[in-house]
Length: 65
Image 1 (cartoon, one colour):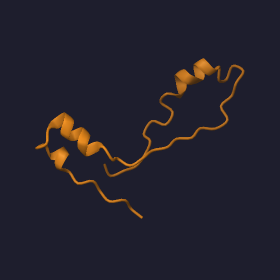
Image 2: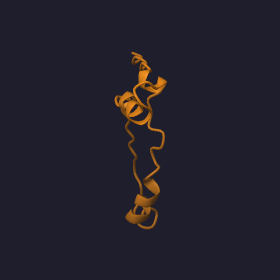
Image 3: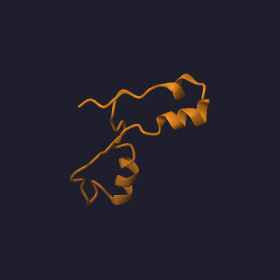
Image 4: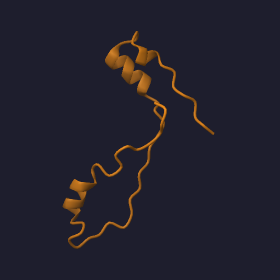
């Protein structure tokens, strides 16, 4: 909740590389990873833990400018 980041940017790269024949004829030239704000975390916490849970009541931190 306090950090913005793509934690596993290459998690799915292994299977895709195998299918795409990377390093056996094709090569990987670049990789781009993107992330976004945690907009739905309060709703997810409410749905999974209930409206009265401490996670559903947690205020999200403001963006650092």
